[in-house]
Image 1 (cartoon, rainbow, N blue to C red):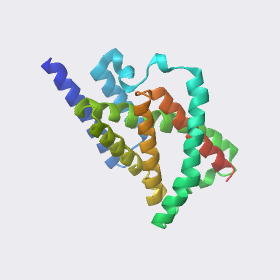
Image 2: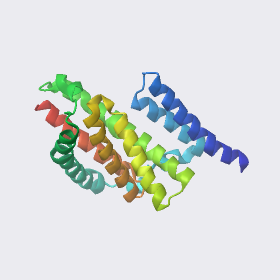
Image 3: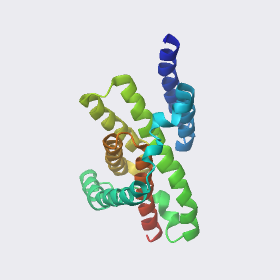
Length: 214
């Protein structure tokens, strides 16, 4: 029991430290962080690693992932584009920095090459790290009381916004709010990571289409 308890504490701490070191080194990529937490989950839970993150076969239902998730994604993107961006940029006086995507405007080949990357890195990678691993580990350490859940959602929403600093101050705030929404969905859906990945992927797909059409 003591050995198992030590493992359940040490492994997550080491995984988080490795991700932080990777970030501070300047070579941080979310896919690398996802690989780290996947390995940490496998060491801690063995065959139950994927289940511990929220990957459950019972949640692999086409109507949820291909109908409900795109509808939720559409509502989230509408909120993002027509409400959050105008309000936040008005309050900060700073426009969001979309310069990273400038080269993809009207570039069909570039957009198509970016498409699998956003699903692998953003949809799968970010959801595995922030929702599947960090949120679940937070609950393991601090419980599932209302105060703990609220702090959990807000904390990793803020952190999610922070790693998007390349979008400027307004981008960090807007993305942080979106991160809070993703975290809330994850909690309300009883830690269904498949659903979160689908919603995230469709949100980014809508954004990518708009990038192409300028």
